[in-house]
Amino acid sequence: MLTAIIDYDSGNLHSAEKAFQRMAAETNSGDVIVTSDPADVLRADRVVLPGDGAFPACKAELFDHTGLFEALEEVVVARGRPFMGICIGMQMLSTTGHEYTDTAGFDWIGGDVVKVDPSDPTLKVPHMGWNDLVLDHPHAVLEGISTGDHAYFVHSFHFRVKNPAHRLAHVDYAEEITAIVGRDNLIGMQFHPEKSQQTGLRMIANFLKWKP
Image 1 (cartoon, rainbow, N blue to C red):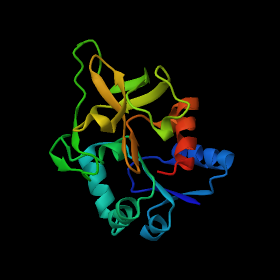
Image 2 (image 1 turned 90 degrees about the vertical axis):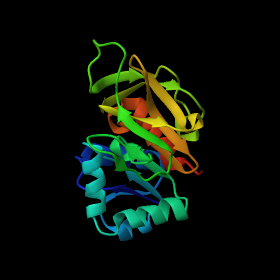
Image 3 (image 1 turned 90 degrees about the horizontal axis):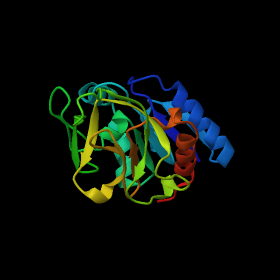
């Protein structure tokens, strides 16, 4: 069993690598590697796409790595291997991102990435820090997670999904902000599970055991 965390120069992956390695050891889920090699992605049993920064820049970085997206698409779409997107990696599942300029996403889950715009002017953007999850739909990766559990967020844009069934959880920030999306073999988290203490580690463990 191999989990590949994709490195496309879009952030420090050290904490994600350590969290996934820890939970893989605890759940006997095989090896975890950080890689930018399409060959590694093609042999992976599950794939994690992280990302920090602006949507257009992260998309450009991913496509600058020759063959990396094609390998990702083969493994996730054609072969149906479990996929987790984190932060911008989750937003890339969308149809279009609207940060700075309209940028096409993967269109694996329909919807748009739009600016966080709370109705309360005292609330700052970016949305940064701990917030309580509100679960919208059950999911295997959310086993043992309850409404009210905390997750750690740092973002200015969020994923407004087209189909409400694809929003698995949200948080309240004077508007409903999508926290988790998913369908079929795909799941994505706006927050950082590797920085979300026991809540995030539980989700990582569940993902490593998930058989969609």
